[in-house]
Length: 250
Ligand code: ADP
Ligand code: MG
Image 1 (cartoon, helix red, strand yellow):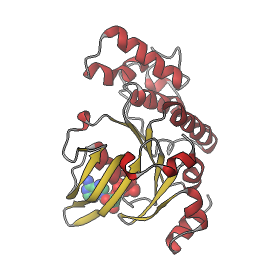
Image 2 (spheres, helix red, strand yellow; image 1 turned 180 degrees about the vertical axis):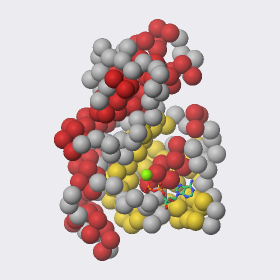
Image 3 (cartoon, helix red, strand yellow; image 1 turned 120 degrees about the horizontal axis):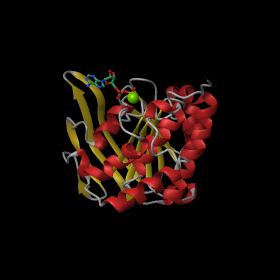
């Protein structure tokens, strides 16, 4: 989907809607009451400094946290308190979260096994997913026999293997060196184009966000500072924080 097309999407095409969603841990507010619409098919990046609430927001959408206030809709369905597995939302983590004793094949097959898919379907879907991330022939490897970049490709294959309706990635390239990070940014963008799925991507790296996103949601101390296209945040920052954070170079 082109950037123009995404920006024309109407609110009724929202993939995810947050209404007045907040998160307190005891007396600490990690996310202030927040409204957000993620458009169907877009690549939305949550950008912000460490501690700004990016992972909290992702975990509320994934269902590993329940909000203190507000509700979350997936399409038109209220999923505020739905179990994570019923949401059909895929997640990729910074630390890969692979199971070390299991082969690449079994790691990627895991989401299909818990859904009790037939064996031949599992074999086909796992090999399709591994091919998409350039890991044909790696079935029998164990995670620790692979590089960081390869391990994250396994993490991505495990996420896409059951065709989730939303794909979320929490600082997936954070542990990788700069060259590999740039290569994998391109691969993830290509995956987004090929799949046409809604992506919600988290990073604290403003260059990564500017390169990859249809829209950027810039967060600061538990709230949204500005939501817009990379050009809007770069050329029309709403306040000094946005201007300084977007203008920063590594
Ligand atoms: P980010 O992902 O942007 O770095 P987080 O969403 O992880 O930020 O955290 C936002 C704030 O909430 C931080 O100050 C963090 O310490 C706090 N926080 C996150 N999870 C918990 C928790 N389970 N208990 C208490 N505080 C938390
Ligand atoms: Mg985080």
